Image (cartoon, rainbow, N blue to C red; front, side, top):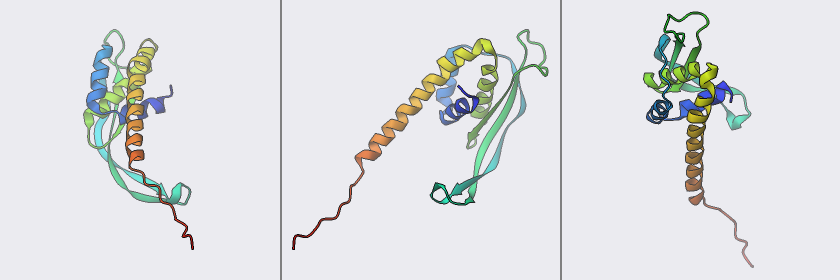
Length: 152
């Protein structure tokens, strides 16, 4: 799984659910915050019809964080220690920090499979199920308009 796909899944998952699944894995490395977590703004761009010229739609708040793992012996982090980054829409510093921690841990080979199979895959299935449920509910309210031909 790519890092971008993992980041997307973690950012779309509510923090409480992410923290619950993370705790089940039992991975609790030592880390330090390198940057943030900080709340800031980002410009959101749009396109008319999805294909037109890009325009600035507006700004939204986002929170970002970067963490660095310490080595396995607990020594201070160095240039070889994995660095993880996390971004999430809104103002949730703990969510961004947790995403950054997961990202850093996923760069360690001995945790990579556990994170992908025990954390990211179930969260992705839950997001897919919620999206499908929302689509079903929206489809139930769809109205098909048609024109009746008058028989004159």
